[in-house]
Image (cartoon, rainbow, N blue to C red; front, side):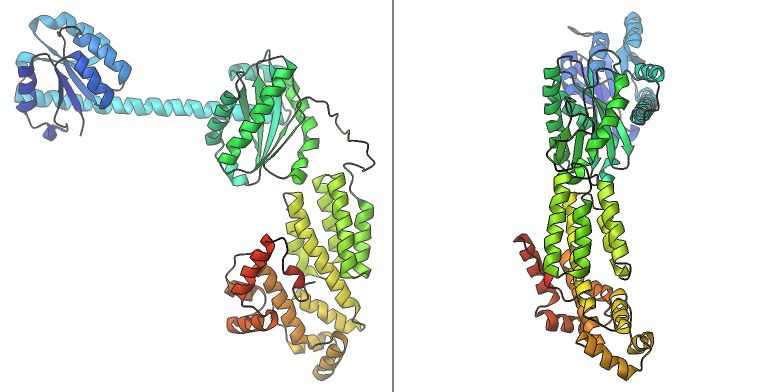
Length: 542
């Protein structure tokens, strides 16, 4: 029901109007009352009402003045006035001030008051519709302006605007075109989904600019999945002030992203003294954006001063920016011929070379994954691992995957090199490839072109165990890795490891590891926190 306030300096009239009808039957709550405009204004400051019925002639503040002041407090209120015979000049002024209707005091009777309230109820609904339409129109204009702004900055990022078009569009969007300085900033999100609420994020970025001071302003738009382009405008020309403000702003932005639980990598480019220089400033930034891979998220890289020339690296003999082919070829060679200990040593030398030289992320992934695919073409179950390697977002995640693959490759090669007969070697490779499937003795004997009995004898002579023992070791080793690296239920772990009988899996796991699945997962987590894991002890994990 609607709230109504009645204002009149005559308390008898107030009492008569309040008691004349049941207000609830007309869609209104019992009226609030005030005997002066001052009282009415205090009530309006504390209680939201939808209808004010006020006397025109009151001491100190008239009804007309009350309407004008009340509209400053609550512009959405509907106003009506009470009038006597000789008040029509005041009524005219009240209508100009915003009143929608008047009620003659001598006509205040039950039926007339009900009709009046019915009319007021329609006015209130019309007012609400008008407000909603205005809000919708305002939101549409705001959305359109936001979309146009996004399109403009996306075109700037892609260098699709000539100077004249950039200048004209910037003027229409009220973007500064003269004076001050521009600094491009690229923000890469670890969780790309969190960039979808870009408009909500934008308010916080604008507040960050206010906190930085110096009349900083932030513009920009999402330009790719997980990538936000910011154009920071600072209306200063002092080089030192610009750098100071920009450094402060970058730190504030990092605080904002951290507070919003967003892991981002920020890369700020050189100072551009004109808007039209931004595309060129962006081109120079892409060389430094790959540093996110090495520095990780929640870090800031900047070249605001422009002192670092494009392509220039310290001449310390470390071949900065180049892929360490020599160390990589050495690692591949060692994996094919040497012991796991030498493989681990060669891997560490390669890792240090990568960290030292920081080759571009895509080159690093292409060279390593491509060579590993060639090296492991007979072990196709590593494709998932290689895919994870290629999708690693940071250097630490990349080497975490690479270490496992290299370690497993080395163990696989070492294991297979001990098998002299080609037929048995091929069946072992088949077991590594298809451990998730049902594998029978008939299948393996047929692959080796041997009878079942002869195959079993030769297999045990070459491998040192029968095929079921090897298959179980492969499966349990895979289960151990799943327990370490996932939160999957043990039933899912069993199925993914090739066991259809869950109870058998649990018994076999306890027999081979000395622990239940739950105990193994718990101890692995504890040892990982201490800096070591049980993964290296997993049985046969090529």
